[in-house]
Image 1: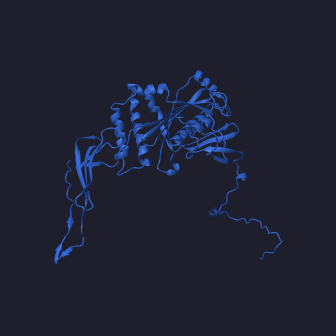
Image 2: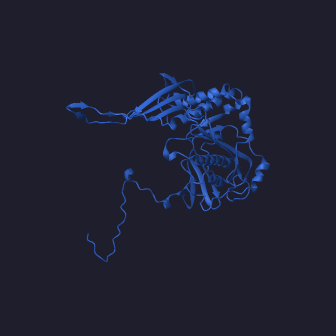
Image 3: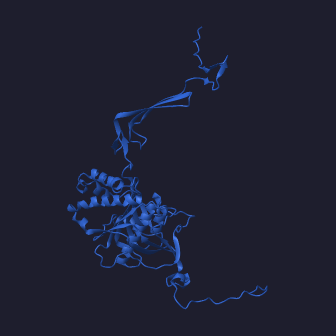
Length: 416
C-alpha cells in the first residue's frame, strides 16, 4: 500500500482468534468489568505509606487521639501477679536467641530476628496460662486477608490486604472508655491538613468489590480480633518510617474492628451499643509501638457526632543495642559491654623519618554505645623532631666521602 495525501487512513476490524490462547490474552477494559463503579474507591493496603501519618489516619477513621495507654492496661502490666518468674532474665534470653543464637549469620536481618523475637515474647506470655486460664482461649493466625468499606464525606474508602499476625479470642475485649467519655467525643474537632487532600497516597480505583470481610468463615470458634502484630522488614519498598508505621497500625486495627462491627450489627451506620476494641503492636526488633482502638460508631460520613478513640504509646525501647559480632580481648570472647576491672594499655609510634608521633591509649570500657558513662583515655605527644635535615648526596673533600648530618644545637639560655 502507498500513502496518498488527502485520503483517510483505512480502519480495519480487529482480528479475533478462533481459539483461546493464554499467552496472548487481553483483559477487558475497566468499563466492561462487572465490578466497575462510577465513583472511585481509595484503598489502603499493607504497603501504603500516607504522607501525614497519624493525623491522616485519625481523619480517615474519624478518631480522637489520646497519648499513653489506658490506665487499666498499665495496672495489669505493673501487677506482680501478672509477671513471669525471672521475667527480666527470660526476656534477655529471648533477645539473645533472636539476635545471636537463631542463625549463624554475623548480622541477621530484620526479616529473621524480628519474628523470632516476637514469637519468643508471645511464648513467655503464654506461660501465664496456669494463672490465667482465659489465655488458652486465644489463637494466632497468619496470612489472612481483611476488607472493610466505609464512606467518609463524599468519598469511599477501603482497608484490605494482609496485615501480619493476628491474635484472635473467643471473647471480645471489654470497652476501655465508658458511655460518658464516648458521648463527650462529640465536642472534639477533627484536625485537618488543608490544602493536602485526605486521599493522598491512597490507591484510587474504579474496579472494586463493596464488601466487608473479617477474613474468617462464619462459625469460626475465635471470631473476635484481639491484637494485631506488625514486624518491620529489610525490604526498602516495605520499610516504614515510625510515623507511617503507627498510621498503618491505626488503619488496620480500624479495618478489623469495622468489619467485625458490621458483621454483628449490620451495614446501617449507627453508634454502637457495645464498642469494638482492637489492640495493635509493631516492632523493628528494638523499638515497640502500641495502639488501642475503640470503635464507637460506624456513622463515619460527617465530621460531627460521636468519634472513635485511639490510645497510643510510641517508641518504647526494649534494649539499647545488640553486638552481633563478639568482642575478643586477649583471646577471650566477651559478650556484654562492660567497664573493665583491669584496663588495657596500648602504645603507638609513627614517623615519617624526621618527625615522630607518640600515642598511649588506655581502654577503660567496652560499653561504647551511649555518650555517657566511663570514657577511655588517650595521651598524645606530636611532631617531635629527631633532626633538621640530612644531605642525601655525599659531600666529597679530597677524595674522602663524608655524609653531612646537621642537628641544630640547643640555644643557650639568655641572661640579663
